[in-house]
Amino acid sequence: MKKIVNIYKNFMNGFTYIIPLAVVGGVFLTLNIQIDNPSLFDFGSIAFFLIYPILASFIAFAIGDRPAFVLGLLAGAIVTVKGGGFLSATLIGFSSGYLILLFNFLFKKMPYGIKSLNPVFIYPILGTAIMFFVIQGFEITIFPVEFFVRDIYSNLDKIFIIILVGILSLMMAIDLGGPINKIAYIIGILTILSGNESFVMPAVMIAGMMPPLVIASSALIFKNKYSEKEHILAKRNWLLGLSFITEGAIPFIKKDKKIKYIFILASMTAGIASAFFDVSSLIAHGGILSVIFMNNAFMFLIILVLATLIFGLILGLILKKNEVQM
Image 1 (tube, rainbow, N blue to C red):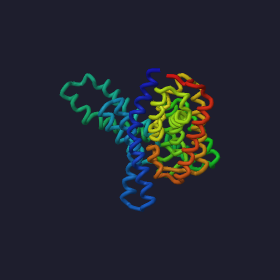
Image 2 (cartoon, rainbow, N blue to C red; image 1 turned 135 degrees about the vertical axis):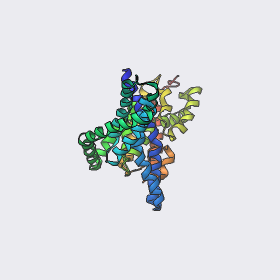
Image 3 (cartoon, helix red, strand yellow; image 1 turned 45 degrees about the vertical axis):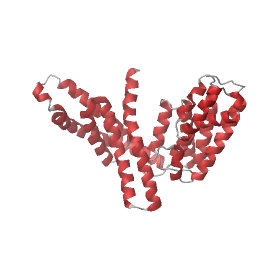
């Protein structure tokens, strides 16, 4: 179990660094569509290009420190140029990190004077040579799988997009910022990394915004069903929800498990409605601020407001007076 936790931490160390790049890339490519400026396109496309090298390098860094960072960065860039995707970059990151750990073990008894050459000469040259063969192997194993998955996604009918969105929306609400939530968010981001607008990303975002907003609206409407402390926390959830921070709703499910089911229903309803009404976006984060870069943004706002009020009412109606105590 500890090994699994370490793998997850190492992966997230890389993933957290690519989110700003995905946001910058999405914003500038969207602006380029509206303004048609080559410089905007350059910034957006380069930001997207850097995503996989940065993912690989920081995963590697978490495992093997600075020598692994350089190896992961270089190999991640090569994978990107060759058309590899998220899975390839992730595996490159882990391979680079553990390769440096192997080098540390193999060369730990080298003379002190020569050992100083390890991080600046021996590790980079030997590591790059090994990664050359690793990437050659990826080209006949991992790349075809990634191409196949991309092809399937790009040819999905709308009904299957909606089914996918329903599943991801459920995942966004089921553990409120936990590992399952993160998996859904990662899948959402994957749908925009080709540089094409996605119906999935805004649906995932609105699904993640729902739980804190539902709590906030419920507490506003049903004042007698929440304690003074809960009202203070609920008011904060307006900002947290609009900022796409799902974790703000966590304190409210600790004493009443059925609240989670309302969150799930709200997230699934909002997410599915977003995809059904063709809301699309290239933006990976930003909450309410990202709306200005969405296609069909007005419909996104309507869904957001209606789902917040309707499920806030439903939640308030099923609670007894001061039932939610923390």
